[in-house]
Image: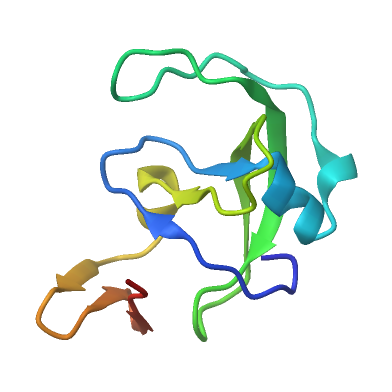
Length: 114
């Protein structure tokens, strides 16, 4: 993300992609937050504290560079980067291989970290 290697969680149940403000600081984009739809409800029905949105240049494996919109979560955990369906749908096919502990997004295979 923005030229930095990060760990992220693929979440096929999430409609949008999210990054926490701490991770955004780490990749040097905290000053890029724009106002946007700040209403977001998590799976348990609670409102999430969203500061705004940010468009981040991303690359998974050798895939082409994708500038994608992330909602910015008001937390400084430095570990909340969630790739939702909005990002995953940009790839033709997604395959989860639980035996090999990997995910394939289009033609790019990613080793899962446990």
